[in-house]
Image (cartoon, rainbow, N blue to C red; front, side):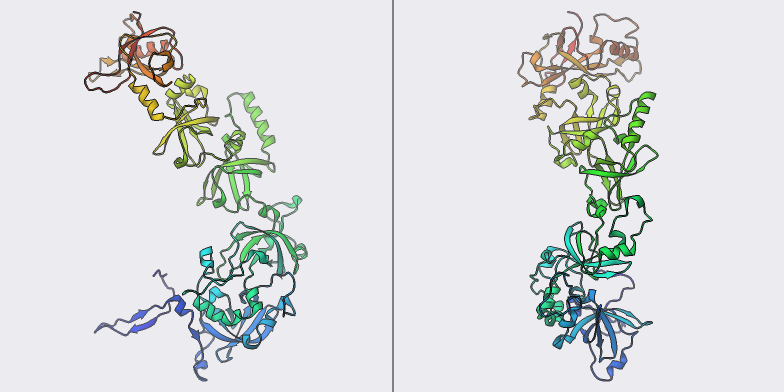
Amino acid sequence: IKSVPAALIKSSTASSGIGSAAVLQLGLKKSSTQAKIVTSVLNSASSSSYTVRTLQPGMLLKCHVEHYARNGLCVTFLGNVFRGSIDMVNLGGYWSGDGKMDGVKDPNLWWKDVFVGKNKTILARLIAVDPATKIIRLSLLSHVLALGPPPSSQQDHATADQALLPAVGSIIENARVIRHDPGVGALVALPTELHDDTMGVDGDENVARNAALAQLRSNDTYRTLSSNKCAYVHISKAMDPPSTEKGHGYRTPESLFAKHFALHAKVPRLRILSTSNLMDNVASCATADSIVASAALSYSDLSPGAKYVSMPIIRSMDGGGILVELGHGVRGLVPATHLFDKAQTSGKSASSYRSKIRSEKFRVGNKIDVRCLQVDVEARRAILTAKKTLVQSDPDDPITNYADIEAGKVATGFISRVDKTGVTITFYNNVYGKATSRTLAEELGVEDPTTNYHVGDVVRARVVSCRDYRLDLSLNISISDHSDQDGSRKAKSGARLDPGFVLPSKCMKIVQLFDSRLRNDGVSFIPGYAVVTIKAKHLSIPENGQSIDCKIPFDQILDTYDAGAISSAQNLDKMARRVLKVGKKINQPAIVIFSGSDGSSGRAAMPIISLRPA
């Protein structure tokens, strides 16, 4: 049992002690059992033992209807010594505000025709006592009688005797105003077609409320009214301010509110904002057009990859970004790098042109299409993009998590990092992958990624593999054969070329350069090498269209070397980089000097070729 410090818990004494120890054993009854306990007067003298200060909320009392008020019932209890009231919200039923009811003279005061005869004696639960003013409030709501929360799911509804409230975010049409609170708000009855007239069967948790309401349920009028549900609209969420008076300080005039939300007035559309009022079981709603039509009511409604159309810009940020209104109290930030598809290039003219376009297109008050990149519900923060290509691409199947990514998938993302090792591409929900510099050189002939790509650029990428949250990408989306990625790697590293095999010119593309390494003595060194890729179509071996990687050591580039070029590792690397360029093809034949297998262990390695003239 979960307990809260200082909480009051009803219990019964099970034992006064154990042996010589002064231990008082208490027992807790089930809530269904406690809910059936009726506080009553045992004899004519016992009523004097109760005072206003000894009455406790939660008491189940046998009450007698003494008077009918315009907003509920006045009742007496405990031998007619105490008087209390049951307001219309706690009567357990609502008139739908539409049409007439059989056997009811005035639908606005339907309780005058229901709580008559035997129904003048009812069971109600005490919910509030104010000893200073002697105000006592009671309730006939079924979940209050059962000392439990109202049904919050379809499963609960199956064993409950009251209708479910609509889900948060639901848009309801044609509701009716059944109570007008001047300057505060209005209570509206939801259409009867939304409710299920079939009440649940009795269960262990339902016996108490059914027993307390069994007599009232026998009345056809009350049974119908108890299936209706209501929502309350506050004046601040009832109407949008005029376009000339937009601002946080605007307040809807009471006269205008009274005109549109008069008693029995029809509410064309409303949207459920909250169903957390567990005591009254009345939803909170809004009727302002901006809230009803908003894309999101809370940050939990946002989802990475989702597109939001015609969102108004409400603020320009100091860093160049903009703030966009996504819904009622839900805002998203569009960073400066996500306003345009291409990153801003250097130069005064380019900068002034971009600033001019930005000031015109992203002016406060303009509406733009955006897409959610990531959202943090707890921090109430959402990052958006206004890049046109990102907003329009992959509308139905964007990349939002690693688990759903399959090899071969082509998607649109943006470059979030560029360095010598490659390009990092980010998609939605902070899912990112990398296209290595070797892959860029092999497939696109890119020598230096930092020259060809910039942070913020929008690119299309193909998924090569995704394992353990590591996403390998390729920017060459024209390749269509992705059926066997593992076989591709095996062909690259394990292909056998016999020594002496001559490779024709222009069939070798340089994809990566590795610098020389010093040995342990700190003087001698191991020459660096270049990795070249050769497509199988240039070779007389069946490799199913895949390419083969080979190594060209830096000491196998020229027939003769100057003494200065081989005097140190740095000089050799400098000479090699002057001759060999990443992404370029070698315009001379080469010869295989190592097949790629050591012959003894059978382990595969990259074949080694030489450019020295034969």
